[in-house]
Image (cartoon, rainbow, N blue to C red; front, top):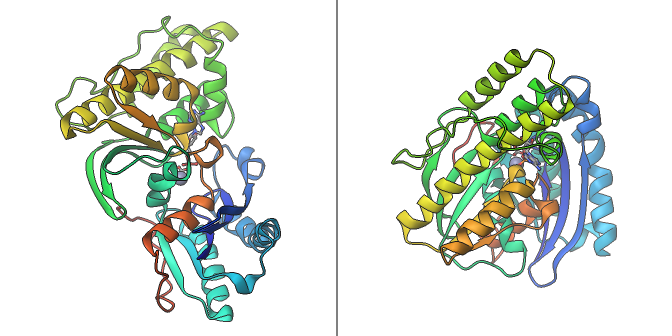
Amino acid sequence: MLVLGIETSCDETGVALYDSVGGLLGEALHSQVDLHARYGGVVPELASRDHIRRLIPLTQDALRQAGKPLSALDLIAYTQGPGLAGALLVGASVASGLGLALGKPVVGIHHLEGHLLSPLLAEPRPEFPFAALLVSGGHTQLMRVDGVGRYALLGETVDDAAGEAFDKTATLLGLGYPGGPALAKLAEKGDARRFAFPRPMIGSADLDFSFSGLKTAVLTRLRQHGEPDAQARADLAASFQAAVVDVLVAKCLAALAREGLDRLVVAGGVGANASLRERLVQAVRDKGGEVFFPPLRLCTDNGAMIAFAAALKHPAGARGAEAFAVHPRWDL
Ligand code: KG4
Ligand code: ZN
């Protein structure tokens, strides 16, 4: 079965072709980072318009890589939510239009389910059940995954998502958008022990998170410093990152222990963070467990995870076109 996956929930236009026998046959991605950079964040209307411009050429590109004509598609999948309403509508419209024109079924996929299942695109592939840490710009959740479509929420952030905390703290440090990768890069040159930032909720009995206070702690330190020099900024970045990573690692270990699991899957944009990856691998290995990540390029938003999730959810193919709909706010 050949599946076309379309992702347009935010500021990346992603298209990919996944074949249930041959794997990923074509991948095309356009990041709108340059478009939004001067506004310091994503401008929803600009995002929608750019998705419109990019989607058809990217689809042609993915088909070319795969050496397949449009008529070879068996299923068309698009991100149905959560995300920016206008941006989601672009993907939904193109998917539905293609489905109608080709007479092929169209399915909507939950963006987080795409992220959640993306580590199964890598080798070795984790077996069910596993615990999953979903860390993106909009979400920070721990889930128990017993199979495709069998997800239980174990804990989540009560305020900011981890990626949001990275982005907001990066702004405080004068780093541009997108802040997470820039902050992580700056942190490489910093001393993580210089500033003792809090580890919010690290000892709480639940598996929830809170990251908004950390950003305030950085702001307070910044004010004490007046104009921090380059080293102080790097030390602030490293100390902040260490606090976030400490909390994420502690809660992942707690989730594995509570659920009696030894496999952890990490997905979402913050899963690209090198320090988080390194610390998680070490900590989980020390407990006799194993951590699984998606391929690095598939940590952030992409069409491959959408095509792949659709192939897993509809192994026997899907039936006729479903109602055209997007869900900007949608729980998994
Ligand atoms: O999954 P994603 O691409 O989009 C959402 O669904 O939100 O995640 C984007 C988030 C942003 O907050 C970005 O700053 C963060 O992931 N991010 C990182 C890194 N790469 C991306 N945060 C920390 N370190 C990174 N290396
Ligand atoms: Zn995402």
